[in-house]
Length: 268
Length: 268
DNA sequence: GAATGATATTCAATATACAGAATGATTATG
DNA sequence: CATAATCATTCTGTATATTGAATATCATTC
Image (cartoon, rainbow over all chains, first blue to last red; front, top):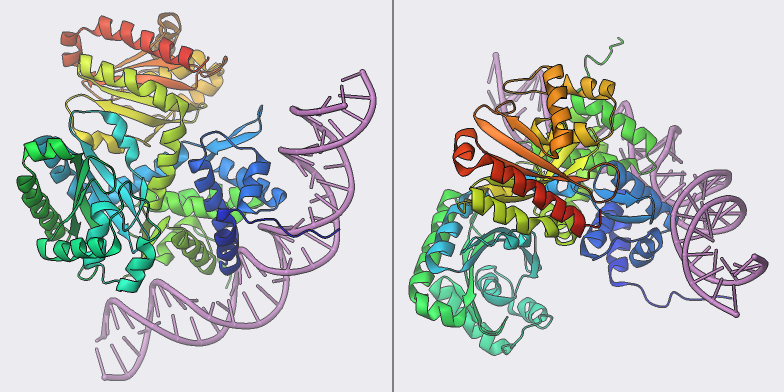
């Protein structure tokens, strides 16, 4: 009996390509396993992992064992389930310690969060594909948001997206293709959005008023590490109503000024 | 001409062993590279990396390329230097999101940090070898300490060490061997220390008064995820003088109570 | 500015990591 | 409780990842 594979799980195709093209395929597999375990809400057994990633179980087992030996993965011998281990935190700490943007941006983020009682993010931009929150500051203490560091978002979403569209040097065709994949709570039309992008270019900051999340306003100002495309952005997030009381124009001005300050400190 | 290798760098021997014994040696190499880049204060070129880890340059290059493709490593084409990339943050976020201890412990940590104006840590215990800070709370806002998540310490150091010695079920010979490798600012003798360990066993918490760091008092109370050895600990850190004013006995009692509460929530 | 040293990168032979089948171990089911 | 079904794990031949030498590229020194 001959059967064709019914459908390939999302992660499988990319991974297969990465494995083929790399001269160290085990590393691509390992990274895929780590990401899968990071996404999963519960520890996973060998089979679900290998199935989801399209890996041969025996190969997958060796990968998991190697990762366990490196303390990047935890193995529970009773349930035979795997999960991320605390070792990944140590790597993250190494990154935080050394990232220039992170150390330079933290102070202004804290200041603006305090002054305007908003949540502030510093994000790193990865082309037109996605952005990652690399620094967070939140008024009122609440430490739970610290875990948001490392969050990934589509590049073109919300206020940061308008900045990337405005300053990233991408063609309108590219932008539209990407734009159509986005999920908003209250989506703007592409032409509306392009107008806003145009305004972002002249104003020097992007604004999202309830598109991404209803009742929430997001501001973003680009930061340059070097000439060319912006490498990072400073982001302010607050309830639309509260922001209007706190003085939106003042926040806009200070956000842009802070982004310019960070850019200068980074030598951009 | 025949030459013997002069001396093996610290990391090299362990790595060589891990590579030999694993069925996925590329993963051990990748992990070693990531850790090296995490420790380094500046981006590194191919040669320094391969030299330090005892890897063949071409192999090392392939490892770095694979890690770069996975966005765990950044490559600067101008300087040809490698550094950690923000991808490691995303992994860490996956861990933080899902770790049971982390989510259960954060609230009591925040509460104690506020009430006694101390820095609170939640640490995960990795046998007699080392511990990793997995949660942090600090009074007075100061966000810079958030980057301390992921820090590694020797298991037997300071107050946590007394807990691990008291409840970990290790033999005195094991303990003494490890103890002798520790670095303290004001080292206790082994017999002094064993007395303190004994007291820790009866009191249910460990205390370090200026041994680890002069003028700083550290308290630690063990947390059990399952019967047997403690899996985590809650740690309070403060200036000795300030702690005495704030009421050390009260903090001790509340710390032990909090640890017991966390243990219960974890089903230990 | 030529020459030297160091570095990154490609290339071809081979030791070995990996795929797939076979075996144990464990859990579900009638 | 027996039997099936699923899962984790060991085993073995082979495609290939790794190695070490060769080449290319860059920086440094005289």
